[in-house]
Length: 141
Image: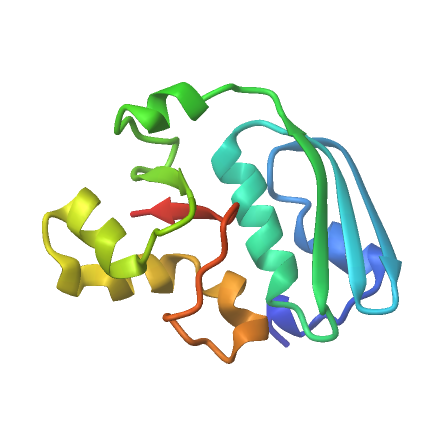
């Protein structure tokens, strides 16, 4: 049984997230809706937790109620990295994966690298890379 086969009960989700640096982790489950709260050590840890839970069986929606200890958002705006390399990008009106790939890699045809790094976001959209929503936080590897 893999980590993403645990199902959507609070204790299994907390166990799956135990190795991540999140203090005061709290998980509540209401049907297919999972709310995660606590204080993540970095934006990357927060994103990783959300992606992990979003991929679990039975999870239809993940509600992020976490805060981040380390404020690395300013670095990301200037093309800085996060603790595992890469950066984050908040989707704004008009963004496309091709356009983001051109911006960050100078090669639009590499858009699937961004898609694959954030695949959990597309779980409810039939994994269609043409779907992109304002406000999504994308990890740019």
